[in-house]
Image 1 (tube, helix red, strand yellow):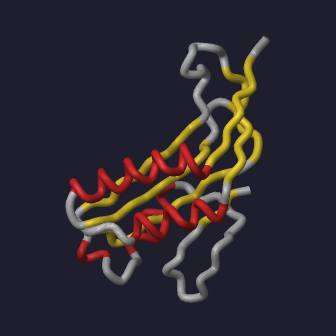
Image 2 (cartoon, rainbow, N blue to C red):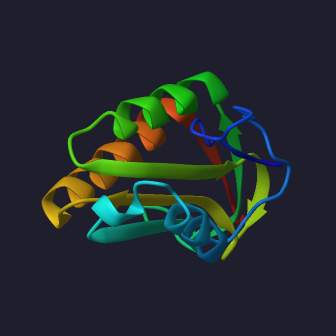
Image 3 (cartoon, rainbow, N blue to C red):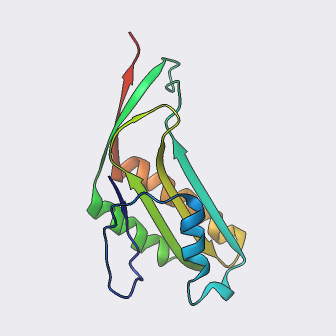
Length: 138
């Protein structure tokens, strides 16, 4: 299950049970009423990789997501200077090598603002939003 938090949507709907690809999120951002203020759209597509940081072979990853903390990071990133829109989809469950875990898309005025916002978002999500357990080959 994936959750899309678009806090700017007219109905403030927080959960959509469809995991969208980056292209769809980019389309949504391009439809934002203030997209003319943006000079850059940046995407991050986090995947399950075959080896862990310590070199062991990974078979799968089990992911849990703190939805409230995800909402908090989205709100914080949207409040940064120069950011027009930020959309995030983070999947929860068990995933195999190559599967998408999260897709983040940020639009903003200048690359310095957008890249800094993306770095902050990724770091916060990996540290405080997502709990992941790697399943190793024996």
